[in-house]
Length: 464
Ligand code: AMP
Ligand code: ZN
Image 1 (cartoon, protein in one colour):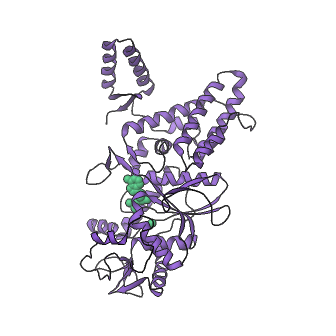
Image 2 (tube, helix red, strand yellow; image 1 turned 60 degrees about the vertical axis):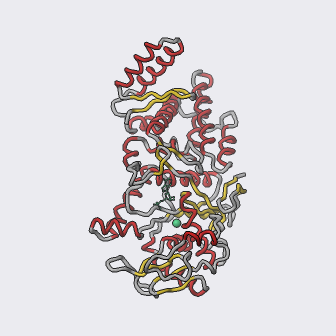
Image 3 (cartoon, helix red, strand yellow; image 1 turned 30 degrees about the horizontal axis):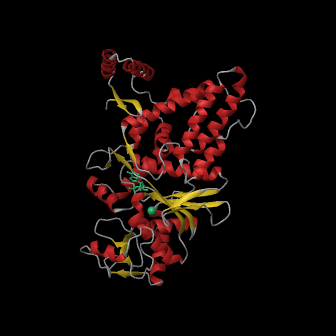
């Protein structure tokens, strides 16, 4: 039985869909004003894995992942570069789509854009005004928080507390400081669309409410995004959608953990952004997925080059085993409870980390079975199951030979040689031959390899 953690109830619940065997899933897409970074990578890797697992469980999933292609940040970048906003949004939409495809993520059923949903957005806002949940004010339209009794139910914030920090910016004509914009009156030189309230553009939150309704209907099963979206984005989406539709918007709210760099938030100002394209040029897409999915999706990840390299080597080791085993001639379910344990892990709130542990054990088992001629067929059967279950995580989909041919190599570095030296060094240390151990360390340093010893063992990385 699949159990999922729901941010709305702050608990694990049995997964039940609105319509039997069907899942309607909406994931907030990126705001396209720059190239995607590793945080975007993680987010969409996580939901790709969830999509694959639900499909594996027999659900027919309609997956919608939007593109926010009109926003302050896009306009700012366009102004800075002296180009029209669409040049920025089109460039980075293409860049993002390319990255998602290169990561090998399944394409969503629909990838709607805010700018092509303007009609639906305007209708949505009109409904909110008619129902007394929104009001026009000098070309802007605001959502009225005092009229929304359940406001704060997702983020568990109280309107009294929110009021303390709220303020009205110059030019905003709100009735209440917590009210937020559904429609923003056009400023000179800004992109705008005609509306009943004059020329303007939509606010970010209403875009998602309208796109979800247009492509999935009034009530959906899953709504997801990164943890930063809980407030205000998703809180406001709930407020808008439930006020307009008078129905529960989403049954389950999933929020994935952030990717930080050395425990710091990734940001342009800190200059620590890890660009996804750059990472894809250095590592096989599956190595990036392998790294990201080795954590539970709700946990934070403290990204480091060393751990990324370690993950790539781990994947290499697993592919090396696959390389040596022929596929089994007939389809048989191998012995052992690997499939059950894999499902048990994934049924436990999509615990891909635990599921990967099962895959590790399977590799060991394949290795063992392939050593003897009599068990070679069993090794093949185990490998087939391994590839099938790996595929549920979006992994092990490459032909092993192709994998080794195509994956970016770690420069001119001979990883086998490095591992040999590290093993030799460990041996020297065990024998208390510290001179030899130091000598090997120097040799590794000369190869630009940094060795790190910890209670869990020794790891290495290339000096960045
Ligand atoms: P944005 O383009 O900033 O709206 O982000 C698109 C999606 O990526 C949202 O679901 C964000 O929550 C998610 N996201 C942004 N930054 C990170 C990060 N550092 N780690 C994980 N997810 C992120
Ligand atoms: Zn959204």
